[in-house]
Amino acid sequence: MILKYLYLSLVFLFISCASIPKEVERDIDKEQIKKLISNLSWNSIEIVTNYGTSLEIVGENATELEKLGKKVSVDLLNAFKNDDKSLVIHLILTNIWEPEVNFLKVNYTDIAESDEVMIEYRVNNFSWYKSSEIGSKFSIDIVERDKIYSYWSNRISEFLEKKTINM
Image (cartoon, rainbow, N blue to C red; front, side, top):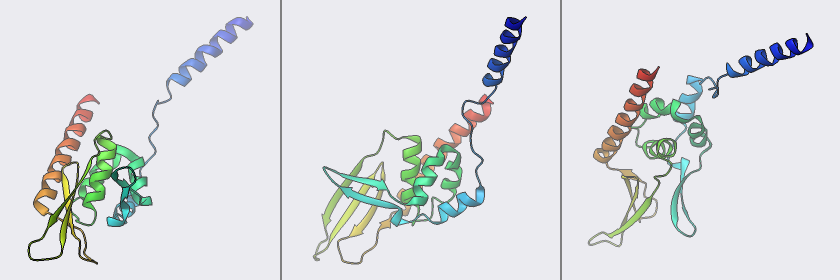
């Protein structure tokens, strides 16, 4: 009789554990996501030179968004066309969707009739520029930014379509 109850208890325990979702997603507070995205800027990234040159996400808001993963991709995409946020959003999306692809290239071009050098940074097909002049700011080619936006938009849309079909 005791073995019967023990057996039934084990079966009940097994069934109960099997019904717990393997990956419990925490609810996303949309207002918190908006706040994190609104705080993204050029200061959310850093060019680091050690044995090689790399681009790293250093802002607390950016790292929190990266931790949230694919579920914030659409929110990030909605803010992508803001030039102060597009590069860091590109890096966050790259780290979430394609973590094996993260390559930084730096080119220096002398500007004719000037002592300046134009510096082009390129990471995963996204370029941004800065003059060597003291106090100059980064700039982005809008046409190129829009190409990267289209890439991420298509990539995320395809994923969402597959996810909807499989549900």
